[in-house]
Amino acid sequence: MAEESSPGQPPEIDGSVPNSARIWNYWLGGKDNYPVDRRAGDQFRAVFPGIVEVARSSRRFLIRAVGYLAGEAQVRQFLDVGTGLPTEDNTHEVAQRVASDARVVYVDNDPVVLSHARALLTSTQGVTAYVDADLRDPERILAAAARTLDFEEPVALMLLGILGHVEDDDQARSIVRRLVGALPSGSYLTICDGTNDLYEAGVEAQRQYNQSGAVPYRLRSARQIAEFFEGLALVEPGLVSCPRWRPDPGEAPAETDAYGGVGRKP
Ligand SMILES: C[S@@+](CC[C@H](N)C(=O)[O-])C[C@H]1O[C@@H](n2cnc3c(N)ncnc32)[C@H](O)[C@@H]1O
Image 1 (cartoon, rainbow, N blue to C red):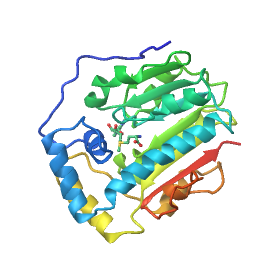
Image 2: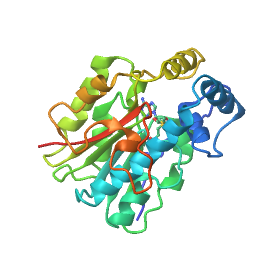
Image 3: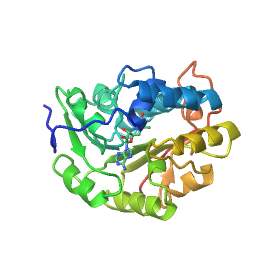
Image 4: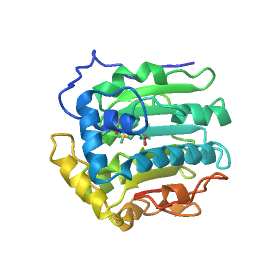
């Protein structure tokens, strides 16, 4: 079964400004991007070539984290905020491969993602829903998600490659606190985010990108990212460079400047 929480009006897509979801799609090797996105993506890559591996290893982290959550942790409900454009192995596909009855709510505020949302709504047994909402409005997210998810049962909240879009640290922390606060004991928070600790070139590429007219992204230190897990118990191996989080056999334990972790609410 598939359902859509809020399809919204036909989206207006601005193809003249580089767009986070489309640039991410470009780095991942997808086709859902415009010349303006490829230019911005190439400029970023010229300053920091490691960004392509950051994007790809972040997706591989997502696949392993969702596999862990649906498998070992036996979570059946997912709230994935900052959906991105459909690619291989989206959250609902990974979760429903492990547990066919998994319920997945995607949330994004981008009309480009909204226009592709139907491609995400392809569950055959579980439920997949899409909500058009902004991370800065957690009340709206929670109200819409409650139409699909049972907040009496554990939920896996996924915030991958999105927290930097909230530039203010206090605001970002308060949003995470509000979302996690609404989840019952036994729920999980998964974060993957770019750090500014490791590579000067990465910080410089981000600085230039943030001046390009695209919606800016704030890199944080690993310590600041760890603070989002306040009150939660980090699942082993903690908050680490994405390729080091429970690597698959053959996965090189490389260092990238995207860090990922999963925390459990006691
Ligand atoms: C870098 S992509 C990450 C996609 C996916 N989570 C992943 O890890 O591959 C960031 C996504 O967050 C969405 N996004 C950015 N700011 C947002 C906001 N304030 N509220 C909701 N979604 C947002 C973008 O539209 C985009 O789809």
